[in-house]
Length: 165
Image (cartoon, rainbow, N blue to C red; front, side, top):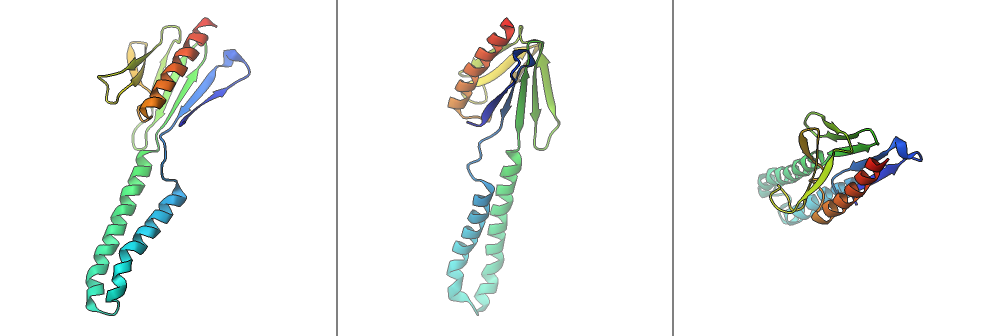
């Protein structure tokens, strides 16, 4: 699951949750995919080696492979989102690091914070939000639907346990 809790031995020190988007194509797979794509696109060019047709087609092959490379690199950069939730008896703090945007932070008292699951009406099904200190913030919008449901259960349980301390 693309999120993990880090526990401390002292319950008053709190816990930390880290969330990140799922990567279906790791970096070694990225290199293999680009190489394989280039090889398969160049395979038909073997028939035209030594002719002027090769020089007419080669720029388009390179543009295609370059376009795929740029699109995949952009996808990797967009997936560099990291959300960190620090939960202590005194405060709950959510920090989101965006790939090309400013750092976003939210803080509230855990006793007054509510975790909400929006089955419909959000940008994605089973949208999870935290409400407190006069604001409502999203958490884990990049997770799958099942992962958001599991996250909602985890957050409710930990928040209620922290509020009891």
